[in-house]
Image (cartoon, rainbow, N blue to C red; front, side):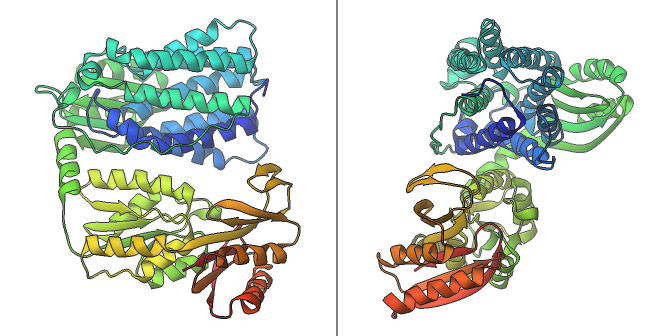
Length: 535
């Protein structure tokens, strides 16, 4: 149990929050009926937190808590998506402001941070509505504020409990939620963020779960800004403006529509409004300062695109594949895929994958994420692409070798549905393993490991811990071959030891299973000297 939130814990919280938002993104999208039932709140929150985490990843390892909190807030401000994302960015700004003043990160600092975040979020919204994420945030901050002199962990436990209770009450406060029989989508996101923070502080390992998939906005959910007479457009932009110009901007935009949120400070602002007059909304920004990265969404078109994408049928399919190294990039490209490889070995982001989907120029696209973390980004990118009228399917490949098996049977000229089935079958028939070094002390499914220990994994689970990479490599292969198989693919990494490990694998196959064909390819991936696939 931590008694103070430090920079390392804050970084862990951001990653955990992103993972859990990704896991429950579909469910939150399905709850989205207010202010616009366009089924994207979960995706918008995920994309906003993804931008926040990416900004913090750019900070040096020695950055203190204040710098990390400010990085989260600024990243969220610049990368905010939708009404919920903009409000979330202001909640994070409130946190950052207090932690800059009280960098000890103790219970008192977190109580003050929750309170400041709520105050600033309410102030940023033109016409606050109860039964939304604002109500959930206020309940959490009020409960935390009552925990005078309580330690950090207890403060957060009370905040989480109050947030859950407030979320359950949202249908009583907002008629649109009661009619649809759901709780508020943005409020659900706030609860997930607070739960991730409480678990980070307590040291509890929360169970990640895949929520039930949601289809999309129901035609019967014609409420809020899709009701007759409601605004037709969502307008968002970043704005360079001196602080003194913002009150006039708020007044001008408030007369043009609703769902007005203006967040930021220090000369940089993020503006969001629902309106019928796009030109006037942008003009108000020009009067106040310099608007840029202007995004306009026509709500009716958005729903039509969703319906068209989900009902579309076409022939032929393009493939977008994530690759963790230059060798893997070449392999996927040689098979006709548009390849995304993130800088410095980081996972492919939602934005990168979405850009790649667009670049295919195809109406039907299959996404191959090729690792569990990128799978979350791929699902978010697919949702965003469907809003643009594209038919996108995510084939949940959890390892590069599964992606290679899938693309090996890809037929771009064939039926999209038949091609997807064929690729999915090939991926599912490929067992995957890996060899790596432990980066920290941890309890694994095979016992404790220490920093520098050799870890052997099969299907994502650690099956052997040792001190000899060669022997661990042979053990992993033996475990995989025990279940049968005919073709073993060995993908070597960037580490110079990879070639020696590949030779150890070949020795194991020669000694025990001469009937198995072995293919060794250069992947160039960081972090994993060997990746293994058995078909």
